[in-house]
Structures are given as structure tokens and as C-alpha cells.
Amino acid sequence: MDIEFVRSRFIKHFDGTTGSVYASPGRINLIGEHTDYNGGFVFPGAVDKGMVAEIKANGTDKVRAYSIDLKDYVEFGLNEEDAPRASWARYIFGVCREIIKRGGKIGGFNTAFAGDVPLGAGMSSSAALESTYAFALNEIFNCGLDKFELAKIGQATEHNYCGVNCGIMDQFASVFGKAGSLIRLDCRSLEYQYFPFNPEGYKLVLLDSVVKHELASSAYNKRRESCERAVAAIQKNHPHVEFLRDATMDWLKEVKNEISAEDYMRAEYVIEEIQRVLDVCDALEIGDYETVGKKMYETHHGMSKLYEVSCEELDFLNDIAKKCGVTGSRVMGGGFGGCTINLVKEDKYDAFIEEATKTYKEKFGRNPKVYDVVISDGSRKLC
Ligand code: GAF
Image (cartoon, rainbow, N blue to C red; front, side, top):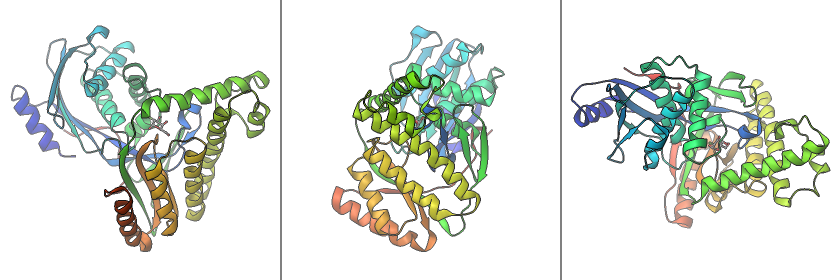
């Protein structure tokens, strides 16, 4: 993330003066997919790719925002009816509105931003953008919000201004990220623990399928609705069940004939996936990377066959990983395209990347992108 680049564009675009520069990262997730909005556990970490924004209060009630990457400029007010049309600007607008709803007194500002999180790769460029502005505006306008609120502001922005009923994982990882550590997060209580992650002899690498399927956000919302219907059915016998996190497979089986086969499959995946996160944490405590990898493959299978959020390209990359003896591999993030995350022994890394690149190109006519994972810090002020 290049501060000087963003600064030079800010100066050029506005009145020649400088403001403050803030950054927030995208994220990976080792395991625990679609578990966050089910009150379960996730295991993400922030990455060394993210968003950088220069921001300066302008003494008006208008936000003047410039997307350096899109070369697009938008101006909007801070009232509910001022929502901009441009989808990128709605993230910034949403964050402003959510701060205001929480009592934060913010005024207008000038801003320019750029990012290096690959779009559509499942590394949550949108959370990086939301966290950057939530963190920065909270500081610049002295709103006094804590980091938990900042993460919730990003999530509420997705819900209320971007049409995605996401969980809290992405924004939490972006705000709370810590270099060298993954975060085991309980998405119901928001209790979290940092797990130093430096598996000796292994590398974490992302393979980006460079496909992003249409309608990913409506399919995402439908998955969430399936889970909620399963919870409503289970609640009839077990009223204390608030999320799938609280349910057992036996309780799900009790309602097998009351819910659709599809809803059943979705819930089955989630209940198993929540347990897998805990199993992976236990395995990591004793350095058992073979078990970590095995669980990753199980997650991929569940996401592909039960939750049905994988696609041909991601299944192909997962198969290649298996053939190359990669320890663990699975689709990462919401799915419907994006990356696989791979835990691979260092001595198998080169052959894997070569084989995956060659065969993927032969089959789909394009190269997958390769990103080595560097686990990094969360939201911060750069200067
Ligand atoms: C997306 C969402 F934004 C997250 O909240 C999470 O549900 C993830 O998909 C799947 O684990 O990134």
C-alpha cells in the first residue's frame, strides 16, 4: 500500500494541502466459513493488502470523495437522503451514517483512497474500505467509539447500504488484525484470542480463480435465510436455540421432515463447520498441521456439496491441490468465485504452483493469480 501515491493524488485533487492517512487490510480465513452469522467461530487474519485513504475535514457538511483506482469523484451530504449512486461511495456514505446513528458528530471531509486488495478474490476489499473510514473518522472527529463498534459499523454498512447481510468476520479481522497472528473469534460474544501462526516448514498461499460469479450477494443472503429457517424449526423443540451455533446434529435431524432438503444441507454444513474451527484450534495448539489440512479439505467438500457456494473453477483448484499433496486446501470467504486457501509444505510449494497454473490455464484459458499470505496488522493511522 503506497502512502506517497495516495498522498500525491489527494494533493492534486483537492486544495494542495494534506490530511491524515489511514489504512485497513483485507483478510484471509483459515477455517470457519459462513459460521459468523450463525453465531459460530471463525479463524481469520489480516493481510498485507488493503485500502489506504487520505482524509481531511473540510469544514462543510459535504463529503468529497475520490476513488483513485476508478478515477471517479463523488460528492454527497451526510443525511439519509443523500446516498450516492456509485457503489464504492455507498461504503463511505454508509460508514458516515452508521457513525452518526451511534451519536458520532462528524462533518464533511475531503478524501482520496486506493487499494491493493484484489477485487472479487474473497479477501474482503469492502471490509477494508469500511474499516479504513470507520477507524479514521472516529479519530478525526473524536467520536469515542471503541474497536468493537468500528467493526459493527462496517457490518451495518453492508446490511443497510450495500444489500449484503454479512456476518462480522471481515470487519473484525480488518480492525483487530495483528501481524503474525490469526484471530479465533466467537461471533456470538465477540470474545477473541490471538493465535500466533507461523507453521514451520509450511506456507499459506492463495490461488485466485479470477472468477466472480454474478448474483453472489443475493445467493449469500439466501444461504443466511436457509440457516434462519432451520433455526426457527429447531426452536420449536429447543426454544433456547438462537443460532445454529447452539444446535446439535441430533436436533437438526429431528426437524429433517419439516424443512426443505436444501435448508437441511445448509444447516448440516454450518453445524459441522463450527466444530471444525474448534478442532483446528486444538490441532494448532499441538502443531498438528496434518489435521488442520484434513479439516480444510472437509470444509471445501461441505462448501461445495452441502452449502453449494463453490464453482467449477474452485473445485478444480482444490482437486489439483489434493493431487499435488498439498496439506490443506479449500475455497475461502463467501464463495461463488475468488480464491482457494492452501496450506502447503515448503518443499511442495513450487511444484504445486507450477502444476496448478499450467492445468488451470489449459482448462479455463487463464492463469490463476498467486498470493503468498503475510499476516499483518489491522486498521491504523499511517501519518
Ligand atoms: C463474506 C462475509 F462478508 C462474511 O461475513 C462471512 O460470512 C464470509 O463471507 C463467509 O465466511 O466474506
